[in-house]
Length: 170
Image (cartoon, rainbow, N blue to C red; front, side, top):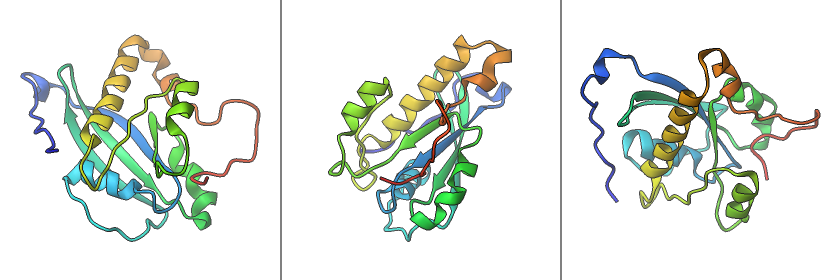
């Protein structure tokens, strides 16, 4: 499936794009980097494991507005778990990337009222659609939240009582 060419809507150049931080979470070797590379550069390569974190940006032009994704691709290896939480701070959204043969992700997403979409970076299946769905959700949330509440609209990744957190693992 080919990616759609996004051209700015008329008048979009007058306003700078809205910036949203998006983090990719998941175990090692599940395709987080491949997903980001496919989305940002429409490319697919066998990639070596991410060291710490990789960073990508992409400006997306939607019907209503333009936005800039700052995509933080976190390492899934155990040795990076202690620093993983640093990349999560201030995130507007998180994509949980996993091997679909490992878990029942759709049931988890439905139980938490989360967006769910199966993608394939290798086959370029629903990659753009997944990021576009996140973009639409973020823009919709921004419109419904007042300017003083925008900080509270960020993803609450640590709701509930304090607990030991193991980032990016099974």
